[in-house]
Length: 406
Image 1 (cartoon, rainbow, N blue to C red):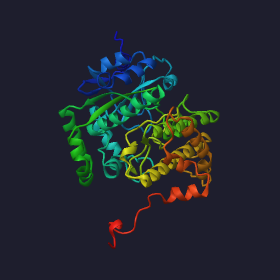
Image 2: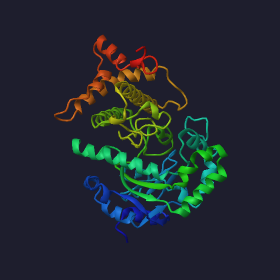
Image 3: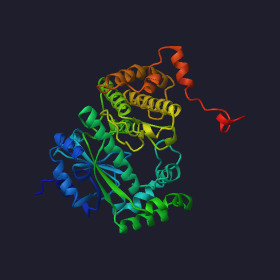
Image 4: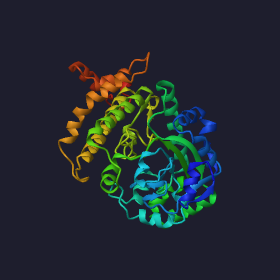
């Protein structure tokens, strides 16, 4: 009997496996992160040892539970494994998890899965999943390109290392453990499936990325990564999932705290140039435990061109968090997912502002002052402050305006 709980759970669920080909191993490449995970998950080194040998592969991409494994509704590229032995399926959501992002091209029935994606609508998009990803996001559907695996790992690891250094604990976000590189045979099989199912224009947009290789990112998360977008579906269909309205304030406070900490660590949750590509604070990534499930689109402050773009990005980030809280609040009161409330969004902005300001001030690291640009947008206590923030670094008229007329 193996001591690696993930392998044991995979064997019990009747999963297959593939030999591992790891291009990233956190125990080797980011040891401080693994040390921190071990303090809350004593089995993590045994799990890593098992992942170096084999990667479990589910039989299908069907939503639902298979032993200790489960795929949440709408998680088209992600599978979870609850680490603790939980005999009651209704308690799976209580355990910490190992998530596998990108195993779908390894499935025996992937061709059927991709065919389904060509007809299933993607959230609020007018396009099906199989077309939304290549045509809107330039991402091949049903897989994770290897370059995306690497960028997401580097961003998440940087956040966790800074968070550990400043706050003494991991951020409430996925912790990257390993990245598996899909074999050339699996890559060819995947690209051939895309060629058969995608219209030529969609295929042309993603062929190069898909042909360069796909990967699987394996991460640790301290609880079931149930997103706000998942909540309305799961609360109605799955016992044991949901959140009481009385506890919703704690979730929102945790979002505000992590939002503030990301800013103090030098990361912007969203920038306007990433429109359509998601954000860690949108309803598709903000989790009901108060964490954020995807850090890929974070923007380091040094990548923001000037103070004007900084303010635009901060306001867009706050606006996205406001929208997430509004969707969350509507879910708690059982509002239909297609019905918008003209009062809720503006009221949520009033609700959010003092809470966010409090966390920005409270979570400021010792011996550090908040970035003045943060307070200039969230602490507008005079008319002069408002006018100054609104006109800072306004774009100049005309090409080469500084030299115009000289």
